[in-house]
Image (cartoon, rainbow, N blue to C red; front, side, top):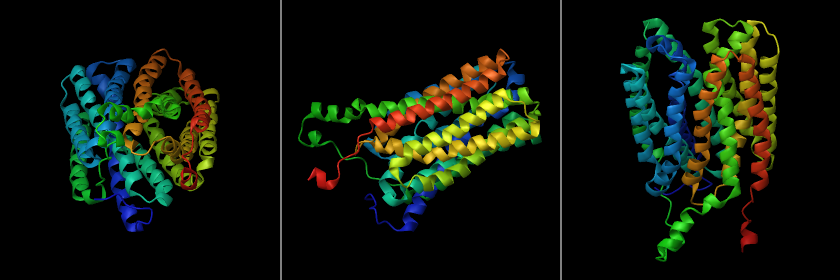
Length: 415
């Protein structure tokens, strides 16, 4: 099926965006099926916070190692089959996690889940950038980000609700496996909206020069903007990783938030981030404002993190602050993805997004270990000061990405 043009009907674009967003939301959902169950898993196996954090570190180490390679596979063989494989691996991993007899076995299945997770960003952005009309890309990025945040928001409520209702954290993970299986069937039935032609071979390869073709394949690695984007996502992941694992519990310790309310704080953060992305999707219409929008959104998040870390708040206000912080981060989301698109050479979408988003996995690998150690040391304010610092560094990094981005010449200039 040929790549759609900029004049594709709205129904075509909406269908593609919808199916991709469902798959993306499920991938984010599955990233957060284990951290909300830490209290149960920790008691079952007698684990410290640092050991629990290592479960997520294993997940993201494997996702990091696989993501850049997944980008090359997507560019070479197309995105749809890679997407099926990612969903299948995550479903098997959820089933295995629920049946794990020991901590060591859980580590193995967390690695398998990371392998399934690694495909989604190269797959998603390859499909969206190829099939969605250019005037609607901002909305596509917003919908993509919203689905991810909704996945994160729903996961704690889903798994904790089942664990409370059944008295078993294993039952919650078995339910996740069933949900993934249903989603895989649904995506397969709607596969017509996902098909994208594989990237054409480099010109040098057509001319029969393998060495030149290989050089062309890796040329994007010499672009400073690509590595600036990698650094941006690495720092972003440090902030996000802390929020998904130990920052809610640290806020609970600082402000006397009941344990049941701590998990709700994360869901509120993610839901408000999704709302912020709706607003951010409209703001991103002007590409020249992307870095400023990112700075504004993360500036809000940094300010709220400082307020949580340094202030004294009644427990009822903590979820509200999480919501404001999530809304700020959501505003930045679509502009963040546009910054990456601006740094992407033609024909290298999968490779660039694979490398850039592997920075997310590196940061998510490190964050649970660092912030888990801070929690074990009782440095609850230190957790939140670290979150604030990461958001401030993000602002500087976004402007660095923008500075290193060199716009492609207009058709007239090229002529």
